[in-house]
Length: 393
Image (cartoon, rainbow, N blue to C red):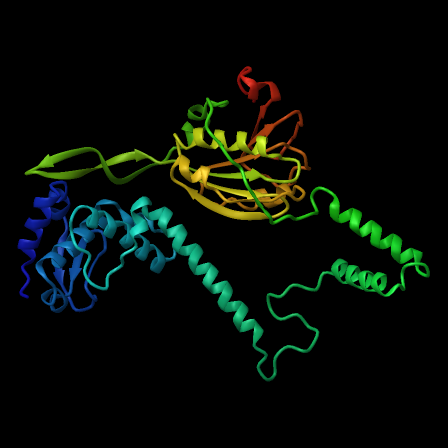
């Protein structure tokens, strides 16, 4: 099919009037140096041979997508990120927006329906995490191979941890106990075994990866004024919005707005000392935070079990919880990503705080008092959960 770049511009602008100024301020260049259509923020480069093989609808789709990338400043927003993953994430999000508006994604192009619920940065994090998981699995599979001339027997391979000496000692003692060698003749070994078991049971050492069910979470009035806590960290960004959409010739047209989009990561203490009622109180406050911020939440005891994306209150109601072991705040501190605006830890405070500096908000339920290195502490006293006074900072 013959293409006409001028006609394509008119069709794109007719559907999205906002693109009028964007489309008029970029230059269009034919080139076979690109596979289909790309932009550098000031130019749109297109392959004439590729465009000629597309339907009229697919041609309009590609041009509208490039105009979106320029309008949303995706090149600037992608600085410092993996360029391949960022381009894929930005395409995935814009493709779903255009698809929602009635344009058809060209055959073979990126089509991730779930991307409609995210902005480019959020979907980039999802794709990046998936790539890292694939890389780890690939590395593990490569590590299982033992090519000729490989590592010496008994020497850990690259990236492999040294055997845990405590675990080896425990296995030996267990064998001795089973064989009766440590029952009567080796009281010292039996004492060592008992001490080892006691050590494992102490808070901060035990791990419990079992799922924890929290039913009927419900909701409650906020115990903390999160508007005041989070207002200084709001970043403004460009994105689609249908909030103030206009009707053009019977077509609902979205507009581009500066929307406040702070991002918050929350880690929830699910150690043995946090019962279901206390965890339910944590989650109710998380629902109140959701009104002011994009949100990710995850659980920890002595290890961190990973973040889950929270878009709605229903996502909190259906969260998967793990834990029930000891408490290690280092696991919580190391869970946060570098670029997040707000870091929040919900806990009962029953463990030593990390020595490292951490700019986070500690929300402590109960009577424990902590002195972390950095950040701020908000105390929620037991009487406040029963309708008492506000929180104490």
